[in-house]
Picture 1 (tube, protein in one colour):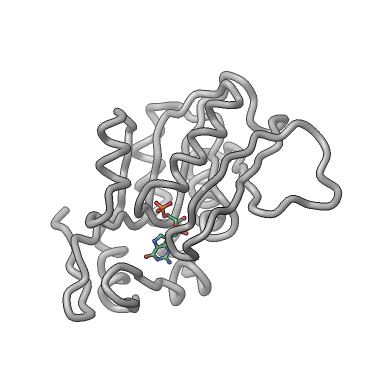
Picture 2: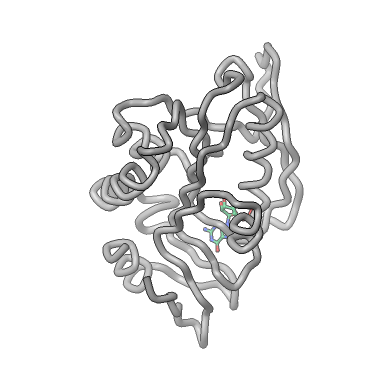
Length: 192
Ligand code: 5GP
């Protein structure tokens, strides 16, 4: 997707050979027009799957998940929580995820009241690296007895195994931009 590719090349920063910071347009400061364009591409690709809801993880997936939910004619967005609230009640599905960026485990949880059995679920997230966050969300979908219809990712890091893992599993995966590698601090994108 050209607008996202341009933003990655012009506005992101790299940390070492494997971390990309996109705080200036996606992860901290958010550019609504760009997010809306990305959401339109997801909506066009996944509309035939007739998703009932979108699932993401707080916090970085929320803006893109929300925009995609709107583009799919206002289906609900459900974001899995990373912190158990004091007032947590109800019946929760939970999965353990190893964070690539923080190098530690965390739990994601979702109230099953908002992830109904048999619902057709589209997962949206900002990055795909080793695939741990995606697999965690897929576990929530499975625990709920819901059905995964696809995964939409803004930026896939093609030099990590998540994308290949999910494609081998037969997941309908759409990544809007794929980074092949970081070379001397420069991002090399894979051709569309
Ligand atoms: P995975 O679970 O696929 O290993 O990593 C995906 C998750 O880790 C995403 O939800 C994202 O928040 C975070 N992540 C992984 N790699 C990067 C990166 O290079 N930059 C940023 N900003 N986040 C990343």
